[in-house]
Image 1 (cartoon, rainbow, N blue to C red):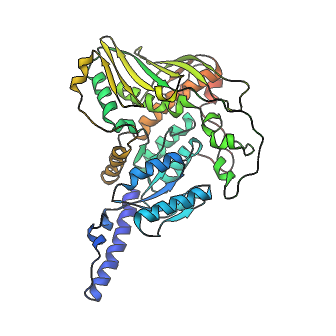
Image 2 (image 1 turned 90 degrees about the horizontal axis):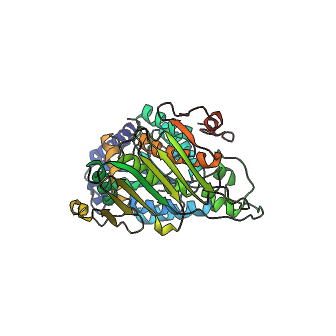
Amino acid sequence: MASYCIRRRAFLRRAAKALAIAAAGPAIVPASASGAEGKAPPSDQITLGVIGYGPRCQDVFGHVLNFKEVRCLGVSDCQEQRRRAAKARVDAHHKTTDCVDYPDFRALLDRQDIDAVLIATGDRWHALAAILAAKAGKDIYCEKPITLTIAEGRALVETTSRLGTVYQAGHQRRSVDSYRFQVEAVRNGLIGKLHTILCQVWAGPVIRHEPPRPVPPGFDYETWLGPTPYHPFTNARVFGWNYFWDTGAGPLIGMGCHYTDIAQWGHASDDTGPVAYEGEAVFDPEAFSDTPVTGEIRCTYADGVKIVLRSSGAFENRYIRFIGSEGWVQVDDQTNVVTAQPADLLRTRSISARSWAHAGDHVRNLLDCIRTRRKTVCDPESAHRATTVCHIANLCVRLGRSLKWDPQAERFAGDNEADRMISRAMRAPWRL
């Protein structure tokens, strides 16, 4: 409701100004006022702020800007070069210079004329930035994985629920035809009784040690670190952040959360999760990075169905396969090709050219939900539950033992050490 009120106040201000001009005498109404020239009329616009303008944002942002009702008013990044690039892109797209670039994203959140934010920072900032955005009355599109810890996920769910925030997690495969068909085939019993969900992601890299170096000009390293522990600046740690435990957790979560999201959806478990985890992983003790290089974790639901989460092989060989008593159905992520046994199962599939790389339909769902105040296709609870599967998988191999999980209490059974890893201390002054 907060975002709706902000938009309504902004509209009333614009309407009052328009009436005052009309009362002063005849005027020529610009085409943009009626939505011509490819623009939405002001009353239909959704104003946007961007937090984090790295490679992923640069891709998703293009899909966002394709919608004429979106108008970006502000961008923020802790790297000056990225901020300037983001502003230049927005200015060129809107043919104005109205967009403001902010070194501190909290100044962007203070603007009451911004309805929603796109958050595409590294994982360390996803939950905290989203919680601050929700408290500032903004609706949210946040990249995945949506949290760095399980505790962050529960805090995010509770905050957005309490404030009525419309939130879309960047699990865009829920809006892609191939994955939707796969889930429908499973739920409709076309592969018989489901027993295994195989999630294949790539192997993590081994990043070698390098000495600290001075922080580059225009790079606010303190903000980049945010709530995570301090480490001296190195290119390896900053640009390979996903492979260091303090800031990421490797492909098991970076890609794994996409697949556990689909697995949870296909298993009709968006509000719960597996109860038992066991597996193994290979770590390189000589590496600078400290996340798994390869691994396999078996995550078992109360009904016996298993998610087998594997990290191995090349980036191009990633896929998710649902296996049942009478067949299987698989989506190859690189090509968007769907295969199945029996093969005639595919006859029921409608054809679509969309793929995981096209975030447009996922963005469209968010924009529609901002207007209707309905839940998005990947709301905070479902995204949190899918991400939790990956968090526990990583804890399982990091601790080197099997784990029992209570999805209702969100606690481990008889394992105080694992329970302590549900959350992490945040570096001052940051806190949930």
